[in-house]
Amino acid sequence: MATMKSVQTGGVGKIDVVNVERPVPGPKDVLVKVRACGICGTDITFLHMGGMPARAHAGGELIPVALGHEPAGEIVEVGAEVADLTVGDRVVVNPQDAPTGIIGCGGKFGGMSEYLLIENAVLGKSVAVFPDIVPFDVAALNEPMAVARHCVNRSEAGPADKVVVFGAGPIGLGATIWLKLRGVEHVVVADVIPSRLEKALAVGADAVIDSAKENVTERLTELHGQAANALGQPRAGTDIYIDAAGAPAVFQAAVDSAKWKAKLVMVAVQKKGSDIDLGGMLRSELTLVASQGYPTEIFEVTPEIVEHHERFAKLISHRVPFAEAGHAFELTLTPGAAEKVVVTFDE
Image (cartoon, one colour):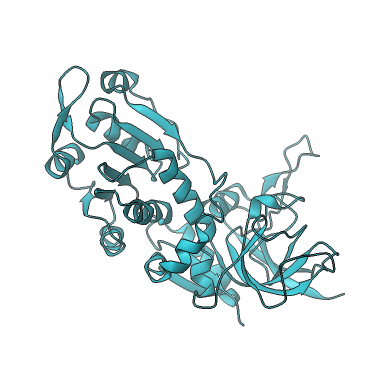
């Protein structure tokens, strides 16, 4: 029996690198040799939990989770019935298409493994092919950039809109790139970490706000002009607020700043509950739009990542070899230590 190394949860705040059976593709499957896999906030959520509850155990027993849902790699085996895919194809993956559960999110397989089985492999549905001009580590951004793209699609931002993105992590910065590629006139990024604000400017933000030191409403008014809410009270001229941070203070800052008929798009998982200022929302007729996942965007983004791969590469702060996977997860677990960590595998 051939084996491979795979990363799974190993208790609260810990990972285990375990030897597991290397998958064997059936006639409708392909086997991918993983070359890079990003670490996501969802992975960290599983680590904080120490696994996930086993449905079969009423007592809430935790079972390990095979981690990694942002893989990119190379096809090394192809089932006899698979069309349009060949050995040597470089691919990114739709983790939600796996019939045995979402890859890296409680499903049978995780992308933070030396090999990944793609069940019922269909080009354009479960995988997309990308050219060799794009490094594997940049290609591994495909899944989080689909999340960011869905958020921007949900915002319906147009060229004349003025937008602020709260949170300069991978999703916020990805949204910034998509907004500018969409032709949006003015995009501001707000965060509390100076290095992240520098990165925001590097990927195309028109201005940044250090919300730990600056008054957000005042700065947005300087940048986007003055408008008013439904009662005529002065507000910033910002049209769209994107919450890619998930902190209660961000939600309130948007409500405090919102003009009449502004829009707030919530893409971040809220880190903890907070009282929502419904009166403030009412006074601005603020529209709240939720954005979850990527219903159609998972491969919509791939050609543009290829075209602008050097720009997207700036999102990666750390590239860590698979042999040092423990260090990679420690970086991601430490607030402020890293923006985007991608684990790379020997070729």
